[in-house]
Image (spheres, one colour):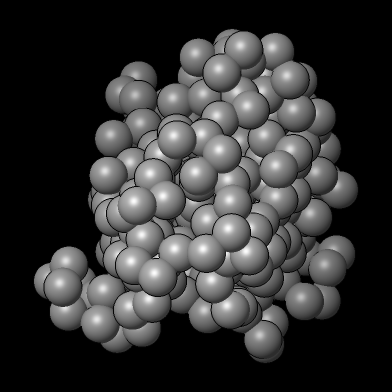
Length: 223
C-alpha cells in the first residue's frame, strides 16, 4: 500500500459509542485526517479507509485474529485498547498491527500514530515502547513466513513484480510484507530504511543465510 498523500481517511471500530465520539472529536482537530466510517464490528473489508483504528475487545470477543487477516490483506491497523499487558501488545504487533495505542494515552499519541501509519512510518507509543524494552527477545523481530520469503526473493536480485508472481500474490502484497518487516525492525530500535540495511539485519539475526542470496557480497545489494 502506497503512503497516503491526500487527507487521511480513518475508520473507527469500537463497541462503545462514547469512545467512537471521543475519537471523532480528537481527530476532528487535525485537518489532515477525516473519519469516514465508524462501527462496532471488525467484519469490515480491507481498504475501508487508509487507517483502521480497531478496539481489540468487541462485544466480549478478542479481535486479534481479525487484526492478522486485515493486515495480511494490506489494511493499516492501529490497535486501540485498554488491555495493555505485555503479551497482548506483543501478540498484536506480531499479528501485523502498525501500532498499539492504549486508550489512556490520549489525543496526541493517537493522532500521531494515525499520521505515521498513513505515511508508512513507525510511531512507537509509550505503552508499546515499554513492552518492547521489556521483551527479552525484542532485539530480533519475529518475521512471518511470508515476510521472510518476500525478503529472501527480493534480496536475490528479483524485482517486486517477479517476487509477486513467484509467491502468487500482488505486487501490493509484496510491498506490504516488506513494509511490515521494516516497521518491525524500527519498533525494536533497529531501523532498516534501505534494501542493504534490511539485508544486513536479516543476516545478523540468522533469518537469512548469505549463501541463500544470489550474488551476495559483503557490501550488500544496490538500493
